[in-house]
Length: 80
Image (cartoon, rainbow, N blue to C red):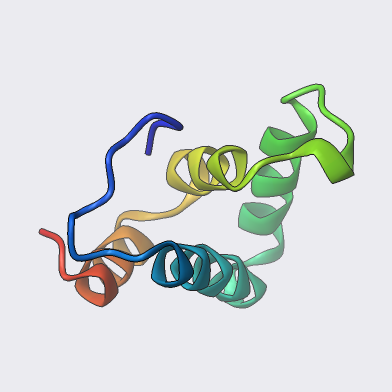
């Protein structure tokens, strides 16, 4: 997901934040290697841990999650 992606008109900021934190929570169930790939992607932004944005997290999540994870996330968001 791009940092400048436009959310659906029915989405509220609170729901968007909750969705991102839900995705982050899902990573706790990933294999060690997949989780380490996510962390490496976040470290690769060159930003300090406190300056990483939700957009950075979504970009890293999208780049490192498996197709099954994407399908589950899309179902939760109501996407396709």
